[in-house]
Amino acid sequence: MTGPDSDERLVRLTDVARTYGRGPDAVVAVHGVTRTLGRADRVAVTGASGSGKSTLLHLISGLDDPTAGRIDWPGLGGRPFGRPGVVGMVFQGPSLIAPLDVLGNVALPLVLADTAETEAVDRARRALDAVGLTNLATRLPEELSGGQAQRVAVARVLAAEPALIVADEPTAQLGSAHAAQVIDLLVRAADDLNAALIVATHDPHIAERLPRRWRMADGALMEGEPCSS
Ligand SMILES: Nc1ncnc2c1ncn2[C@@H]1O[C@H](COP(=O)(O)OP(=O)(O)OP(=O)(O)O)[C@@H](O)[C@H]1O
Image 1: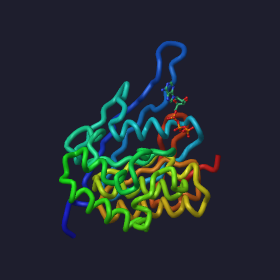
Image 2 (image 1 turned 135 degrees about the horizontal axis):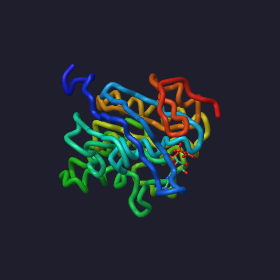
Image 3 (image 1 turned 30 degrees about the vertical axis):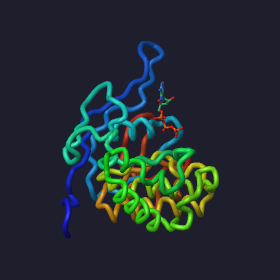
Image 4 (image 1 turned 45 degrees about the horizontal axis):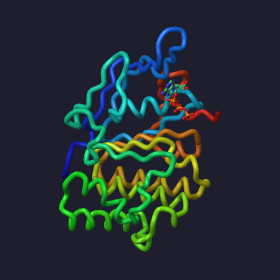
């Protein structure tokens, strides 16, 4: 295989905690997390509402800082957030830019990263093709279904070719068939890019589509099966 070593450690968390607020009102959202995420990992993070899944993903992507412990990104050349060619993020809700058509949305991170326009458009078209949405390239976001919009968000990640894909409840607003399709596209994107993938989800059926599962419970992280709550 060419390209980076699939065993490469991308993210290393050492006794990480994140507490919101201070004093009696402090909320310990995440604590005692020591874990690495490698390029070959495709991980579902499950757990009840409020168990710390989003906080953990924000820490891993460098969007937030731990209040204790340490996070390193040995395979990513430092903090990834804000570097679309390093981390690609997919969120639960609408994340597309309303006045831009689908192709413009997929190309945007590349254009912002100073990729030549012809190359950005070329990569955006290939990414749309990979998620089966070539025919929607000139549509506006408001003209898309929820499932189509999430597939465009996956195409946007694909076009930027990150080493780490972080998806926070990407299927929460979708029916089961569209949810499965979006997760399968994320896994395929990770495989095609040789990127690590971490997905927070409430849904055990979605978690089962990923080979590895981490479970959050009251801010602690354990390896394990998805809980059904
Ligand atoms: N900005 C914040 N300020 C204060 N508390 C917060 C903040 N963000 C999250 N929390 C609290 O931290 C804990 C973990 O929240 P987090 O959003 O990480 O959980 P989650 O598992 O992703 O939940 P959900 O599945 O409902 O999205 C919760 O108790 C939450 O109320």
